[in-house]
Image (spheres, rainbow, N blue to C red):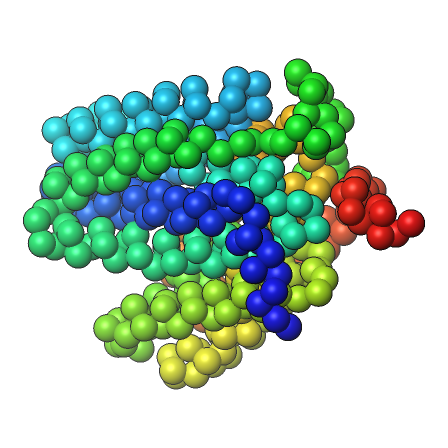
Amino acid sequence: MTVEPYRRVLAIPGVRTLLLVGLVARIPVVACGLTLTLYVVGGLGRGFMQAGLVGAASTAGVAVGAPIAGRFVDRRGLRPVLVVTTLAQLVFWTAAPFLSYWPLFAGAFVSGVLALPVFTVVRQCVAAAVPAEHRRSAYALDSMLVEVAYMTGPALAVAVATAIGSSWTMALIGIGLVGSGAALLALDPPIRVDDEPETGAAAVRRREWLTPALFALLGVTAAATFVLAATELGLVAVLKADSATRWTGLVLAVWGLASMAGGFVYGALARGFSPLVIVGGMAALTVPMGLAGHWGWLCLALLPAGVMCAPAISTTIDTLSRWVPAAARGEATGLHGTAMTLGLAVSGPLTGVIIDGLGTRWAFAISGTAGLLVVLLAAPAWRRAPQPAMPPASVADAA
């Protein structure tokens, strides 16, 4: 294993800037949900259930809007979508501190539908900028940067809300989102390149790429985020039950660092693995985590599954970029984002029911088993997966 694959990726013109802008732009995006929660609980004086409903409305909006934004990117280009979504975020986050609960609930949904598509845009542009033979390393690097954003954004939201209040935090989130949209507009990365197949096509019919194999891939993607969200809730519940809540930040940081290490190793390997193997392995390694007794042992038990987290996400988007024609990549990447969002949205309440009804440690066994079941159900459709076209260099090497 060497760092040479990453050097090759970062040497491609525009990739360093794209990944850096993507990292900075994602920080306010990942802080949105927690900021809304802090405002509903602290600013409006409501309970966590009402805060959860606002978060669910925003999540539902993102799930609906992601493929729509992707389709518009495919047909109209990146700039019009960025302009509309940036203005929408400016309006919502400027008005949000002055809204009562139910207008905030409705606004959160609309804001979710018109969310700034940072995640999908960066991934789509990575596929356009990086040759197919190097995309696995590029997506592994992108997944590591996503981990950095998730470790930074919520922590900053809590720190700012504690220092100056949740209303001002919402205003700063709005400024951050507008800045993110402006940065992407200024960068204007290409969403496809001229020598890619189907680039000249005005549109690609969905039935040509929205196949049973792609539905299976989206299901496996949702299963991955389902297991990840259940693991996070399970960790928090175990630490609370063991009266070790003060160590929550440390445990989650260890988990995030394990994911980054796994992503680094996976991106540097000579060859990748099927999402069925990576996601199935992560789910299988999650099942026995509940057997750990003390929370300290649980912290060690989560490491094997933790190293599979970033590879699980990067391998799904890498596979999707190979299966889907360039002219439909925006919509397909949006569907990938929707699958991830649905996995997170479904996992929260179901894991809560498991923890309340059966106990904290059952969350790991049941969620891991559910992830394995989805992988097994996806396997038959995988056999009819489209064969990605070999890049020109690979064809020459094969000859």
